[in-house]
Image (cartoon, rainbow, N blue to C red; front, side, top):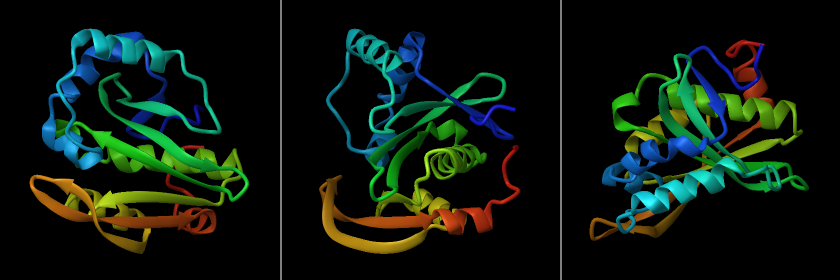
Length: 186
């Protein structure tokens, strides 16, 4: 049993050799836009340095960057936790799956693996996800997983010449336990 492995994917830390995959991902403007924003072009040297730094990271205040790979070792995306507040017991995350690997259940399972760990091992009681209002696939994913829409902040994202809202979704540890009692390998 590996707590970081589900039926489709496993989560692992970044390895220095992952730079090539991330460099390729950084060329995906639409993926970048949905995750954060479109950045200036990145050099291969910069991508290599990022991967080396990320590979040497340790969890800081429960924040961590995970690589998402299929059980056969194909790197399909990443998920990183953020805004981890142990006193309140809440955390957030950001996730990205390469377009050719989307809609195969990888994002769902990665989110559930992270939630299970934070709820069952670190005693967090609430997970939050921020989704851009133009990111329809992410909206559907979070609603399918049982996240509740908790708020909308208008005109907080600017891309493609327009402003969009931020949508705030959340799920409690009790809601997670009720819904996903048997969903993942033990």
